[in-house]
Image 1 (tube, rainbow, N blue to C red):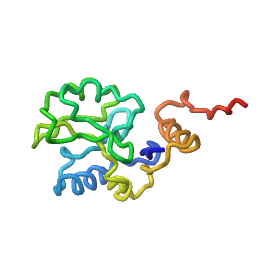
Image 2: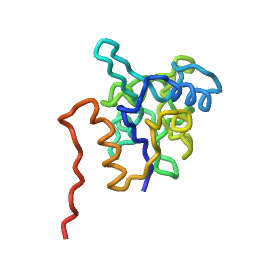
Image 3: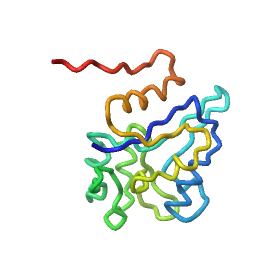
Image 4: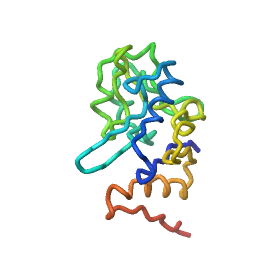
Length: 163
């Protein structure tokens, strides 16, 4: 059973520490443009939304990659194999969640790989907006309800298992 990131947008202040922590670990630079997590802000509506790879069960980015550069590792985490990526951007177009993009320096695809099980963004978030959780039903409920601040009409209700 794989682990995932759960983000509670109601706790996110938009400080962008997660972007700095990610870029520091992934690229050894403090450069939000090179981060695998992005903070999107709408200043007019005062909406702040962290965007990151959702580690989809059926990832569209994998099917869109002509070279097979996006693969699952031994922890069932999707990652981009740099040597195989040609930077075509097909994966970016295919991802409907905005969880993958082209890195400005290397011109290759980048996405969250959960930092090998110790996500830097979680450690960098002083407000507890990002958690590293399991894929159990209660954790998935936590993940889904983390976006409830964006839409008061959206709630994930855990379904009872049929006997």
